[in-house]
Image 1 (tube, rainbow, N blue to C red):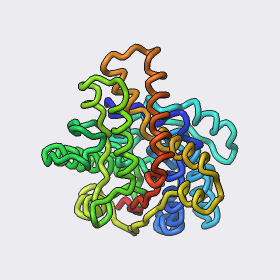
Image 2: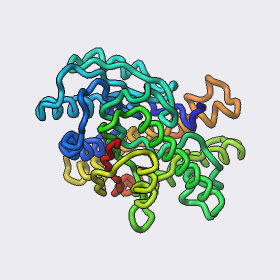
Image 3: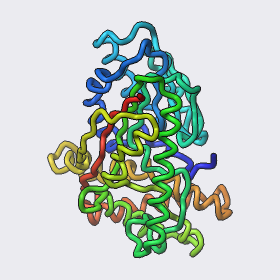
Length: 339
């Protein structure tokens, strides 16, 4: 399956501060997920959307520790780290080689298809990944993100693609899980007002793209293949039931910008704040611009210079308006059990 993105940038492991916070909040539900687990043996634990590995390995170690504490681990499990074929697997391999707490392997497939054998997985986990769509269904006109578009057709196209992807994700995880296994999810969403939290950052991305020497076609194609679902789209008990899942628990959480808080509390300097916020944004978004440039035939030697210009512009704007990096991002955390 062709993917909508090349994956995260090389700085992701050290700068995924929001994703790390979401993962830690999700891990607070691990005890309830382990309590719901009802399998004869935990043979395979899988993380879908492992990226470069830092947050993923921490999550897998935490799950294994809980299993041991609750005496639900009778032998050493195999951990599978899944992500796109274009993921920076070298970064993940290096971390796995440094980690001796479990045996891990990787799966380079889209998680919108079946990645592992049927009835093989005891615990499936995915944090801050399901907002990435399997493909970009439309271009957002004159902006980077479809939420800013006065174009109902484009928004509906993204919403429809997100529904198809969520259904496929649940279908394939249900096939892979053994009966009594659990699926643990953290999904970026919109709040009751339709706010995703990082709107100002996304708007600045498009502003910087407009300042680059891009063609009109490149600028049109520079669209984020993401849909942050509503509560009702995330917590769909009919969809869960259709795919053989029982809803054990859900909770909504909101995460404020860790970097903005640290700067305001004088834990980091202004320079550190702007540099780190730029790197955080680069970590999750640079591949979209890089992929756009490649698609439209930019010379390989020109792309690094354009990307460097882009992030210099981003940091310059952030220094003038540091509040752009202040956000409150909503998430829904779910525990599902395979019937």
